[in-house]
Image (cartoon, rainbow, N blue to C red; front, side):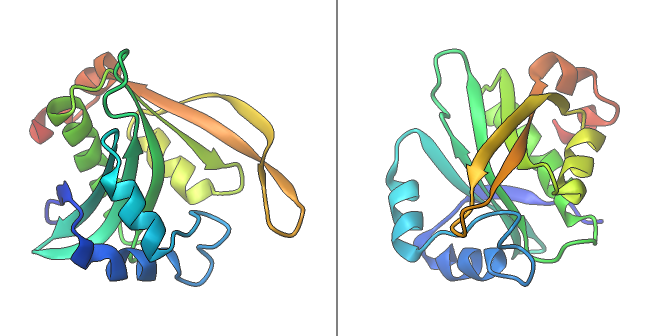
Length: 169
């Protein structure tokens, strides 16, 4: 698979981002932003809305928050790939990890995944993320249901020691 480049999102990318997160089956996995939500997130000094690009074409998006956290703990709010099941998510997350640890000087990357999102959790585990715990009933759906979230993280020393991480530097 060709390398995925991570870059800051532009206003022109919003249509792609909204389309990617509105694919069938994604509503219960990744959440949705409006154009106004994306513009607001992009304007925050402590956030980074990023595009994963392959062969100069967007293939996914990532939203990072707390990128200037004093303990260098960066929260991965959202990860979306345009075409699931093709290895793009794994490649994009590997590139994101390198970007966060190298460019943003992160010490810890962390996220919360829906407990039922087994595909995403498998990708994170494959890249060295460890489960830290379960946030019981932490996500409320518009229909009144609540589901658990699985909190996972990756530390800089783990990433540095991870097999094949050196080719990303």
